[in-house]
Amino acid sequence: MSETLLTYLITALVVLPALMLYLRSLKKREARANSAAEKGKLYSEGPKAQHPKIDTTDCIGCQICTYVCPEGDVLAMLGGKAVIINGYKCIGHGLCEDACPVGAITLVLAKPSMDASMPYLTPQHETSEENIFIIGELGGLALIKNAVNQGRDCIDTITKRLESLGARRAEDGVVDVLIVGAGPAGISASLRAIQNKLTYITIERDTIGGTVAKYPRQKLVMTSPVEFPIYGKFSKLELSKENLLEFWNTVMKRADFRVNTGEAVENVQRGEDGVFAVTTSKGQHRARAVVLALGRAGIPRKLGVKGEELPKVMYRLIEADHYIKKNILIVGGGDSAIEAAMGLGSQVGNRVTLSYRKDSFSRIKERNALRIQESIQKGKVNVVFNSMPVEIREDVVVLDVNGETSEIPNDYVWVFAGGTPPDDFLKKLGLQFGIKDVTLEASQEARQERAERKARS
Ligand SMILES: Cc1cc2nc3c(=O)[nH]c(=O)nc-3n(C[C@H](O)[C@H](O)[C@H](O)COP(=O)(O)OP(=O)(O)OC[C@H]3O[C@@H](n4cnc5c(N)ncnc54)[C@H](O)[C@@H]3O)c2cc1C
Image 1 (cartoon, rainbow, N blue to C red):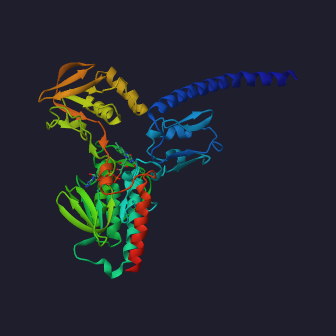
Image 2: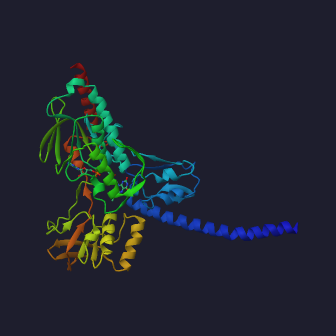
Image 3: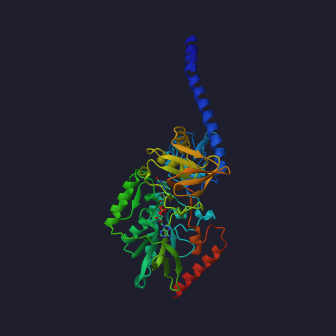
């Protein structure tokens, strides 16, 4: 009897401290999650596009989902269950869904039509205007895999429609499809058009690769297995930006893909015959269907200060190691600004100042928040809150700090103030946004009318 008691006592002595430690760490984690959730409420209106949906009855509170997210604290444990605390940070990698051992997480799409700030789209990616399609990030869904999938599927829809036109389809100077943008969505759509033997024109205002081509050098890109037109199954999960671009390049060469780079689309108008006239910076094209794969990066927002037109002012940093022993000003308080400041700050002899108009960083990744503190402590970056440049000159920048101006020596300025998404352009084309747009029904009626007219003719 006394032996059994002794065994119980020893077990209790071993187990209790471990249990206490575990409970204490659980309490600490919960406190951290609560404070992150409060912070999340301040900056987040919830997920904008695709995001995890957690079934709390199935969630066993194992926390794995909170560790695997590359974006930081999107998810946390509250009351022993996984919850979304910073929905705006989610860009839909879906690693939480893959990692959940009990299948309690599914990745769902915030239907673009639920949000008045997104263009209205059908499940086939068609806009409120018949035969104008939107694919990729412009439709509200980030990630390369989504862009590739949508580009491919949308062309399959167009191909089926065109097939029903038979011989009437062939007309001089009219292509089957005009694709705007050569990021991952536009590349995938163009390759599928080649594969499906459609006539096509692809127009890109910049260079091939879209946002991916503008990632910093050697950035690690996370992808998912995807059926890539012409090539087939592409199964790499991680690769450098350069290797991904090289892969696309090889497939594009194999398919003899042609793209009009340095040409921007300015307008799309439907003619009486249903064929679109597409006006660009270089002329006009005619097409039976138009696929918009413009992304949402838009045109970089400018500061609107004197001297901003100087060539030393830039809005994107790709090769940080090309700049050494320079006086550099970074403007902005988001992840891009902070990453650029840290990248340039670690190059030999650079003196980097980061100017941000607010009094603290807000919407940044947890790991950037930690790393920038380190850079400040090591003297690699000097952060000036409550400040903004008021004038940029050849060799100095005039900075307003709390209402007082001072001049700092300067060789280069990078501005990271976000971009203006192409919403005005879409509105100019007459495309409807969200379900709140009352004119949508009218446009659906018009579509019905057109369909009936076509059937009669
Ligand atoms: C820093 C960063 C890191 C990321 N990391 C990852 C990652 O690791 N994995 C992942 O899956 N996703 C990642 N993403 C997201 C991914 O890059 C995008 O979701 C994807 O590039 C969207 O592809 P897209 O083709 O829709 O648009 P984009 O890639 O933006 O391409 C749009 C193209 O359209 C062109 N264009 C725009 N307007 C016009 C016009 N009027 N006329 C002609 N051309 C026009 C643009 O020049 C551009 O080339 C990241 C994004 C960023 C910003």
